[in-house]
Image (cartoon, rainbow, N blue to C red; front, side):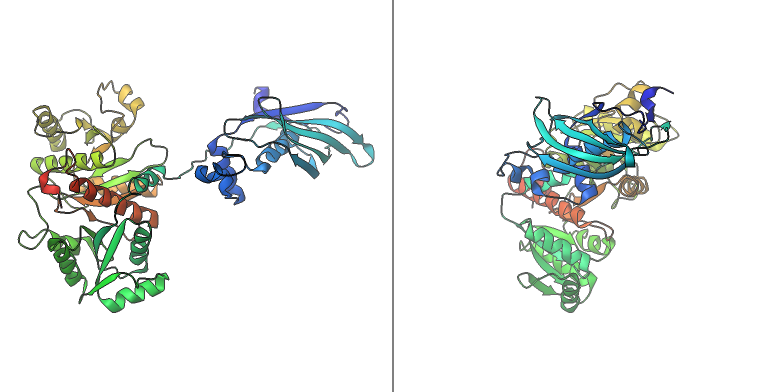
Length: 474
């Protein structure tokens, strides 16, 4: 085993005055986030770039003890190393440490006291320019027994900050809140999401449902709904019908699911005479914010169409492309998923994928790049696509994932959510207005992100954005 994979100490008898050891680290945003997570120190000087720009140093800086931790690492792993007992440490912070600074933390033996095996170390951290940023002195009880052990392998740590949703919400920061009919918001979670979205100036809610139950839910959630319009309804089906009626009358521009079942809400949406149907097939899409994935992933359809036909899949793709345009993806890469990436006559999903791609070639589906069939791995992983020899502008770079049926989509979205730590903002497309479709298991962040997506869709419809069909306009 190589020396770099081992930790070996220096005993009290081996240590000599003037002996030194050091480590070098470059400060990144991840280091600051991890230190804040462990310590609980969320001072905006370290984590909020906008605030830091107005603070004393005009930039994000490291926690002071991050540098102190580097000194501790030298003492614990280099000199004296394993078996050392840290007794005291003084630190003086002389310069800030900013993102990108390379810090050398070093300790030098200043004095040995044999009576208690005490060693005094002069400690300092310097930046890439040689400037001292931290100085001090440590008092350590040195080990007497020699230790040589393999260096511990640290676990991989994944930070999940959901920047994608933050960017979506930032896109809605200007503009008037959208009037939103909320069907049956009779749970604390539903009320909390409504209030949060209203506080973010995304929506102006109209609460539709049994008044007593809505007020009770608000009280349980600790939320003030005094400023919201409230329309009484007898039960969840009545609430869905009245909420849809508000859309048809022009009193609301968005529809939001509260604490009723999806099929109850959609039962009021789909009737031709009283609902919100257009010539487009209504479909559902998840905008997935997946940790460590560079762009949002749109998964469709995982909630509305159980086993869509080829014609219905074409509309599902058109709806998803419209959504991608609205969230800032100019020419989305659309992967039509199957279990394999080759056309197999015994697997209808592969035949439909090939037909959909040919429809795109002939201009029947526009606004995006289509490829399929593709398996999930080679749709999102360039390495997997290369391993299979797939040459495609979509493979390994997909931004829209079109699943063969609802079961596959639902399982894929939930696997990403519960095993991959992803958030899934849900929206229904193809109706007269965007429909905010949330789940009881959704986090508050996800519910607000769903509102943000719907607001962007509504505003794009108002502006008659390119790629958004007349049928989808409010």
